[in-house]
Image (cartoon, rainbow, N blue to C red; front, side, top):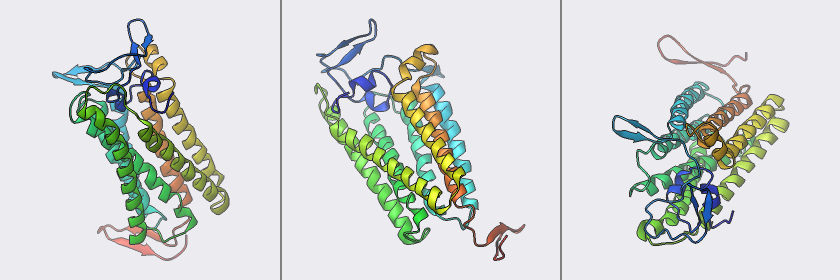
Length: 316
């Protein structure tokens, strides 16, 4: 795949951004042949994949990606439970920072539902902006993890105003960088429908390369914490499991989507299993933090029957 052309990727998987990007390379679905000199001058949608999940007409409303929608709706419940559990660990290291991260993921899933289910349909004027916001929130989550990855080294005091400003500042920078890289790429489509080929190099570097490097740094930091600070191999196993689910999700989305879609008669596609793997990855992120902070409590905290927080300085 050329960096400046998403045609090969978009022909295999129904990414939201593929409904916006244009390319001179298009796939003819009837005979599965490629045309490399296609002129999308009057085409109001982007690159169509070879196979994608069928839509459902419910109460005169078309809903796209129903299977993927169910996974994301379930993910909302999972994230809410995780946030509740984080709030119960009153003195754990990184409590506020990780709570902020999962609140961002909650917002990301909501915008994913808006984009994937057709609340803002492809081809509409608002669709490129919703996709750019979704990409921006995904980048914001990655940049937040970058800061959270260093919490285990005690480089600064967690939960303080300084720490939260650092986390929120980097998340804002991540959102702005990814949002601008996306919307400026889509801008030529928005302003000039006659463009024949959109250069996506900047978006590819920011959205894929930079975020991938950030996730790699976070993984290395967690491995160092698990091996040399907490010395807990269960944490290392959870990290390996989280990496496994994340990689499998990317493979399902970018490599196996067409095979999955054709194998189940268009009922689901690679995004279904990609979203499912992402939920498991988020669960592993919570479990990693939960295990590394389990012994960090210097006193126990409980809530009495009147709803007041009670602190006990005696060690358990």
